[in-house]
Amino acid sequence: MNETREVVVVGAGPVGLMLACELRLAGVDVLVVERLAEPDRTIKAGAINVPTAQAMYRRGLLPQLRAEQDAAFARFAQFRRDGGMPPIDRGRRPAVGHFAGIMLNSDAVDFDDPEFAEVGPAAEVFLVAQQSVEAILGGRAAELGVEVRRGVEVIGLSDDGAGVTVDCGDRRVRTGWLVGCDGGRSTVRKLAGFEFPGLDPEITGHQAIVDMTGAENLRMSWNATETGIYAYGPMPGRVLTVELDGPPADRETPVTAAELQQSIRAVSGVPVVVTAVHSATRFTDNTRQVPDYRKGRVLLAGDAAHVHSPFGGQGLNLGIGDAVNLGWKLAAEVRGWAPGGLLDTYTAERHPIGAWVLDWTRAQVALMRTDIRSRALRAVAAELLASRDGATGVFKNISGVRHRYDIGGGHSLVGSVAPDIELADGTRLGEYFTGAEGILLDLVDSGDLRSRAAGWSGRVRVVTAKAAQPRELSAILVRPDGCVAWAADGGDLDGLEESLARWFGARAHT
Image (tube, rainbow, N blue to C red; front, side):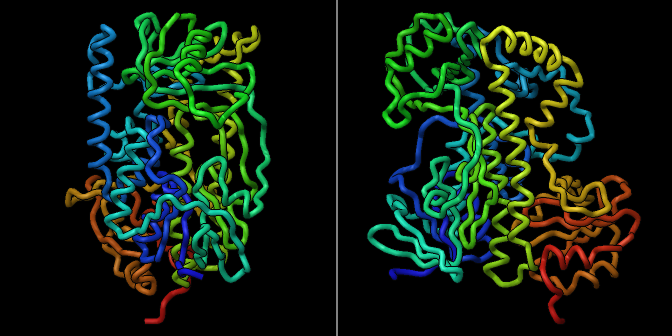
């Protein structure tokens, strides 16, 4: 045995790095091992949703996200200039996303809907690519002292109930817990013997950044044709194609210029010539999910636990959600204060969100089919998505503001992401999540509340402040992942201690 660690995370993509940061913030000794020698620069998701932006905002990373978005907007503006299109107003998004390639016009969305309320400054950040998220989290991991060991491949593992021995070829690592964040073809999932049921793929997709001639005849944005779907933009050279004649025969060999050129021509009908490939990937709609995200002392997060088509960039955001949900719970288990069953709530809370995303992506593939019935259904869907209610409802799903956990509790806020309450001193609730503790916000300066919460000091931080605007809410308990665990109106403290014990363990003796 070469070394011992409290937690080993396999995979140094955004999910693995986010999880490692959450663990390290709680003082856990975590090692990240990654098969690739360098970060993967292949083009992937191009945007983040509200829960992802909120998670990074709570950890003080919003300025870095803004900087990346500014750079992305500059590239977008150049692309529009090159295409002879008018400039866009940075304060107004002409579109807020798509469903099956049907664009959602921002003018049709009711942003005054209550579910968009009190998201806070995280709502301003969305156009951040997966590679940028990974770079930001890599920097954060280095600041926290996370060791990321690249060029290391896991070839075996053994869970004996007391810990996991991880075979990395030239060395073995003994760890209390192993988490596979190693993607859709997860080695950890296979070695640990997780079931992975689901549907086989039926499409071949390509996404790439290329140099090509003849591109002036491609239509911008998403386009449905007689032979499939293609998207051009919003960045220079970025192109995506979807062909619905079965999965690719080969997923392993590098994507060539000839392959991309053939696919673009087949779907768009435009005789482009691809002269250089800067980044390219194939994808399918293989749709699968493990029934349980934990098997003994081995856990899965991100694409290792669920795979689906990449439409809408849901995979990145779903994986980040897994990481922030799991991180504090696993840290509590390692530190020895986790209440019974806490770690089991990881699957209970995240599996339904993952199942929803899988259905969401399946529905999009159904609307992309080229047969006459599917095209008729697509026309109906496009009409509904142009309506106020349709656009608003779909955007609430795309943005993630509807995601919540069914954890019980009488208050309407319980299970949702905490509102980013503006406080009288100019701060906001989200700014207080700099450590690994939960936050108990006392809005009425209650000595009784502080007395009841005293036994959880070190796990829960009590913040006493007045709200900037009058409100019925008197107190709110928020878990480290931003989920509301308890809330009260009018000074009623019923259920506070039960909730503290449920999520933060037994009261410490004082």
